[in-house]
Length: 177
Image (cartoon, rainbow, N blue to C red):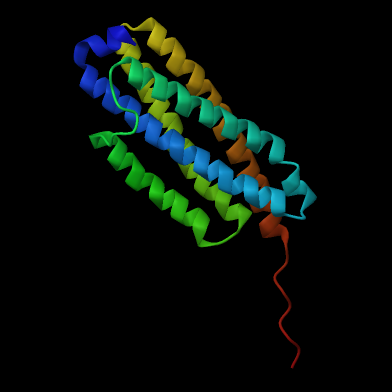
């Protein structure tokens, strides 16, 4: 990370804080989903608990790793930065969708939005590290990007299955006159 930060440590810290804000939000989203999955009686949905918990733990690891990297560069992992404030505003919209109702289908839709943005953010860090020749930072970013890609694939697949299930349910019959 030192090679990357040598160019402009303040901006690198800002980039890392951006990812950190998103990872913190991701942990909250997964926590909400885990609570709903634990409470459901639907065995198909309950079967998702293991994967969702694993992805939540990876999001938490990303959060803690980023905090460590920011501190190592002399930054404050809790101070708002230009980019982290922007990401926090974006994340609030996704969180609001999940608070709006208790539909697990809607939760996965919101989570898909978050995971797409999360993947793009980690991919940006991989490309920046590559551009500045910081192979160690690139390796660390790429490791987390691959984990995020697994999350995205799982959320996409699950949303597809839940949507197919939802569409296949016939509408309620109209009352007879």
